[in-house]
Image 1 (cartoon, helix red, strand yellow):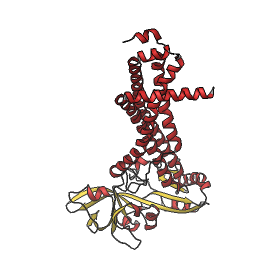
Image 2: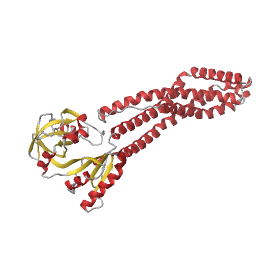
Image 3: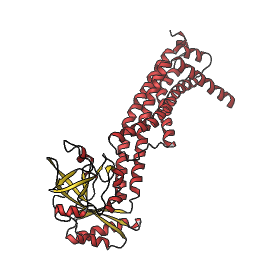
Image 4: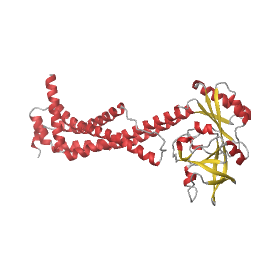
Length: 411
């Protein structure tokens, strides 16, 4: 019995391959439809997984970090903005945070508005005061296009973002140029490269200077935010709540300041990435639906063209089941080959898409690589096979229901 089944399967496969080869042009167009749909899905999943990995690696090392902000707290969309209310953290707030048990280190970020003058043009810019140690902790040196970061003994030097250097003025600013901020002379020590959407802190339109120079320009120490690191990552949430309570008590308000842990930021970003990936894959799946219609159309055409052949097969003993299996195998073979080709194209295509994103939108410093797991490959080929089988069911059923006498007479 097993020998008979194996022979039947082999004969059906041979016949299916023969029929595909005889209608090669149509078969290639059909499997290309499947390949394009699978390619889109595989490449989008690979890029989505790659972005998840890149973000996790970027932020997981900061899992012991708490961000403290005046007002509603951290928001990716409000980075670099200045509080119009003029409310800032105080030296007392910082001292109280440092005294909380479990706190390892507190660094501050000063923020204010200034007028940057270059040659005969002026622009309004956001000034950020930060000591050299905090600059190192933020890994700003990795984002430099030219020049260098500031050192603690530097005076009247700044580092500016790519937009300020290249876009804001008729003539581009280069390292070593002299500019004025609120009438004070500064030398441009470094220029950040364009970051696009990478990183938690955007440096595209930043003017970075040391705290003492900041205070001379602004006239006061505007502590816009603080970054707190803790000894034990298991205490991050409880310390964050204690920081909020302490600062709000100092200012007599329930919501003067808020805290955000980097771990919660990571989770939020991952949720957003998951939603985006799901939507994109759903859109790409439309191509698979179109491809399945293409398979059904191809198989129905094949049934019409082979009506006489089907009649002869049934006349010499082929059952309805045999005929159905034959046409389902043809559809399945087309979809499997298309699925394999689509998977390979998706793997290589995702690398090309990432290269294009890196050169146009993302920072060159972002180590973004497509992630293609074995499960993704198996699912892609499996889904293509299922699509092929389902699309072939109706044509196969139609072929199986043919009357052998009428089919043989068909011209």
